[in-house]
Amino acid sequence: MAKRVVIGLSGGVDSSVAAWLLREQGYEVIGLFMVNWHDRTGIIEADCPWEEDVVFAELVAKKLDIPFHVVDLSVPYRKRVMDYMFSEYEKGRTPNPDVLCNREIKFDEFFRAAEPYRPDFVATGHYCRKEITQEGDRVIYHLLAGADPDKEQSYFLCQLSQHQLAGTLFPIGHLCKPEVREIAAREGLPTARRKDSQGICFVGKVHLPVFLQQKLAVKEGNIFEIPPDHPMYDRQKKDPEELESFCAPWTYGKEDGTWVGKHRGAHFFTVGQRKGLNVGGKEDPLFVLATDVKQNRVYTGQGQSHPGLYRPGLKIIPEEIHWIRDDRVMEPGEKRNYRVRIRYRQPLQQATLQMTATGMYILFEKKQRGIAAGQFAAWYDGDELIGSGVIHR
Image (cartoon, rainbow, N blue to C red):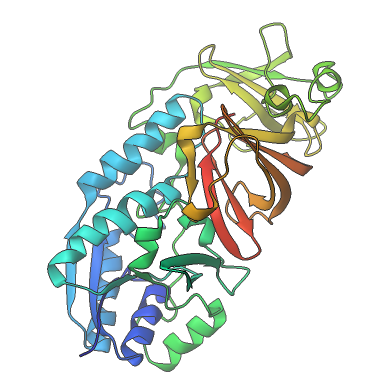
């Protein structure tokens, strides 16, 4: 008897080809479309709303001759993803809603929504791979990078657990995007030429300040420019053994910087941001170095090479450390070398992870640009994603 798979059909080419591959491999496939967001505030009009996505998803299901259903998960999505996102921005942090969407919705709420169909597995169209090994009586599920370096998506799944991996299939992880497009065209799938979705998971491409104004008020404040020769850059972060100060963010006070303009709310900005400052007359573009949401101040510096954009390390507090490989948990006093990324598409960076009683410190071989609290740092051993955590500072 064929094993049954419920696949999240999104109306895009990746999940369409994933469904086709599963059917070709002999699985009994059921398509399930998630509706997660209804509000269009701040959404760029050129983006396709979910109403169009569901039409394409149903057309794919008909082409493949598989059952198709729709589930509305907008209530848990708002509570578990978007409310968290608004709350983090309000605190002056930079969340990654796509990582949260996978942990809280696609691999949790969606699993529950699939239960009535009694699946053996749930499948998605992510560009990542899963391998299974056994050590004694223990089965270990490995989350590996996808074969396509341009589309590799394991970072977005950095908060998954062994339990979630056990019940999941990634049918296209071994393929590159051109191959996926080729299969879709050859098989006459309606999504073969659809553009990839962009922006926030299930919401789309947004004008972020307008989108955030659903919950966060406009509050006029001041923008200050910090010179690259600020003495703080020479004083701090000299000794890697002083972990707390070495991994601390740059901080600025009322006496720092020169006034250069106004903004509409410090919580609308993040470290490394260039757009939206609307300050002209500078030799080089201004970039955000830091924000102070309590004082409603934004601190900036000129040029990509400004020292305030770069840091040698970061900290993750104990309750925010997550291990996909729970057999590789680090104990206080332990050090390990891994490759780390702090954002999607960032090349992996060599780093030393050092565990203490107060949290994990990640010390990079080369200083990293734009480290921001609220982002996820993910660490890899070769192609395997081992664990991740929310950057505390």
